[in-house]
Image (spheres, rainbow, N blue to C red):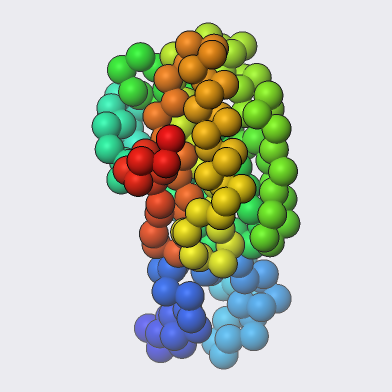
Length: 185
């Protein structure tokens, strides 16, 4: 079994840890020597269990005070995805995450989401604070000009509505980019 595990792990060309396993279908896993249908299903089930378990992080009472902590809120849900996704974290007045919602799912290199789609749920909840994140399936976290423009527009809209905009995080392969840390809003 250890040999089978090592064989699978050597296929991780992206260096994103175990996340690459979620991208394999059952049929693709069965192509590895020593993995039949039952083991492939078991691997997929374990990956899904781990994803759901880790989505509970950070602890509900944990205060988010740094870009690193904010990136962890989004990392497991966005890292390694083959489509660009936009998510919003809604936080209470003490910077504790209340809820994370998916705003949109795009394609491999683009995603369209309207500002009103980002802010609709936080307004409905009278949320005092939000942060947004999206992923770059390429793994490169460098923001595009559209990313910068969109972030500034979100910040302006939040200011008008009395919602504190904490950050915009781009998730890549085991890395992230914080717009706040880089003074881009």
